[in-house]
Image 1: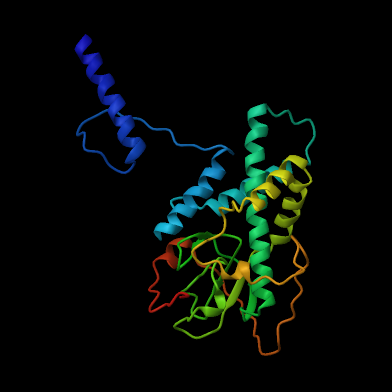
Image 2 (image 1 turned 90 degrees about the vertical axis):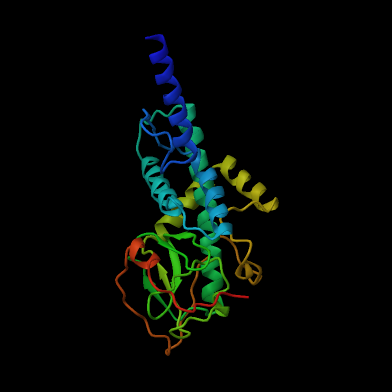
Length: 267
């Protein structure tokens, strides 16, 4: 009986090791194993590191980090309006991580969108009905905004120099933007009213620590004109030759499996 228990414990421990490092398969044969996978707010900074690492490796992310962060932050923003909420210290620490990560993401997306509109790199603006899609170039997940071409087959995130891209279907570039982006930016500004969050954001900006950028292709960020400030009004009138489009979105699985042809990224 003692040896049976020891054998069970050994298999149990080994299966935990296998599930931890190789979650999709194992070579133990018949074994007993269990796994619990969950994440709290403290995970989002680590998720940003993982997303950046996947972008360097040009691999599609396992989890839609941007979508999860935005939805969790908006739930937290809604809960701030409720009364008699009693949070523990652990909950407050998790909320702090969510708020800081969300503010950094929204700041980047606003600045990138401002640069795209200012440079007239896009042809028109359309509502984003898509679920999370994957950037054709760096495989980063896009939830709030992305650029696409006429054939809807080459989605690109805002971390690239859009003007230098050569789409196989032509040079028309459309900016897809979620219709609730103003509400998300309002939530980010609300979070920044917390001195602890604003100080941490400014410190990370000074240290150049921004995990939501894409350092291998960051021309748009260095091309921002003087006078920009976070959450400033983006009011760029498109020319009469810029035709708007109305396209219903496609799910992640469809776009990621499309034949992208000879899509040339920036050099």
